[in-house]
Image 1 (cartoon, rainbow, N blue to C red):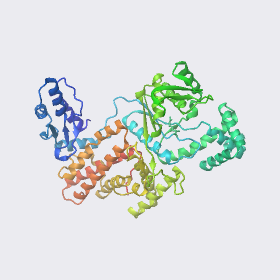
Image 2: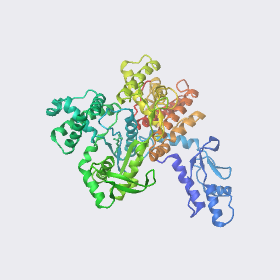
Image 3: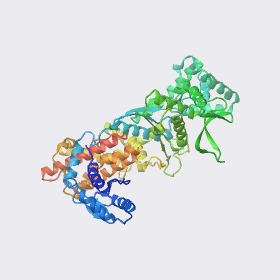
Image 4: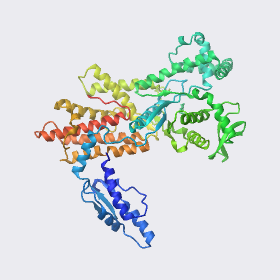
Length: 586
Ligand code: ARG
């Protein structure tokens, strides 16, 4: 099913091409009008075309004349009222009410809300979350985790085969310190790794670090532990393994809570490949020796002194680094995991790192550059615009943030909806609390910093999870009051177009597939949430001005209930795309 916009665009393209002939048009054929005064959509190509024709013929061509010529070729009566020319040569289209209502009705009863799966399914690997295992997950890991999950959901809905990968930091020198600390404080763990437990990873890390900073003997022992680990000493590896397992268990508790699926394949999994990666880079002449280390000089990378800056792949002591592991991972992902596309979600500061490894991978023919993308996100700030911290200035553990979100949502739910069961409050606290955390993150464009504010997150009005969830619950409440599931009315013959509010709401719903196209092509969750907000807002105006249950006209009542059902379907689908559960009561 093509969206109304797409169908109209096809028709307008035919007319424009008939006038343009061989001339290529750069601009969009049809765009939504900024002002309803000018109808629903506009075709603005007459200006561009007139300019090009003037140039070609040497005579001044008037854009309005071009617009008139296009108008003569247009066959859009099926969808649009008679188009009108405005200003210097815009052509304005106003959708016919019947066409709109008819399309919306078909779209709303479609299982996929009128959005076809991709014609070209691919294997897409989304690399997200990826915390470093030495510490517990903190708010700094939140964004990658929930943005990555949403992007994976988008790709899954599109029909791609998605691999959700957790590239955890489970290797490196920090493990020497931790292993040595385990050796000293949990001697039993060496013989019996199963017996070993860490109550609080954060405390554990802090204590180990303290000993590391205070004692030179400990420092030396920690260095030896790294060597033991890297040379494959069995007992050391066993302790390391238990430590990673324990640490991953914490991560997966959080993923479970957030309803996020992800498979672990950490840095250590690429250990055996690093040597070959570097050897191949060297033998290909891409990596060269630079100040004792090995690096690749890529075009366009300069240091402060404007000298060429290498991307280091092997340190002068022979050790490998973050970039080496990512190169090995890329090679593995394309060759072994048969990935077609690779999407990384990390904080924006890692952009250069990814630009460099993408470039090197292309140079080495491991993967084409344009099949890899990096989504860099901004920081999560506190209300005061400073990095989000606890009251005493510490890092906020993700676990604590989620507990607080639930308890705040629970308090709000009791205020908003008295008289529900304990079970229901629990469900609301969970959906609205965790959904609220996700929503407040995803409703901002990914690349910018955003301020996290509890009051804003739980606001009952505006572009918030609670507002959307309340709107959804309202559509469900209608079902209860009407004694009929509004969702079952999708086969209704017609939707109501009698009032301005109904028409506006139907238009908004009908634009969902077009909005989705933008969401997928830009991988931009905020565009989706903004749309859901507008749907909910337009539903609010409809609700305030069009009585639904208290009317005599049964047919009108049914069609209004069906419209409410459609709103519910779109909201539920949209929230599911960002991993937020809906609630029947709120
Ligand atoms: N562990 C990294 C960090 O904490 C994120 C890993 C991202 N994925 C990757 N393949 N580099 O910043």
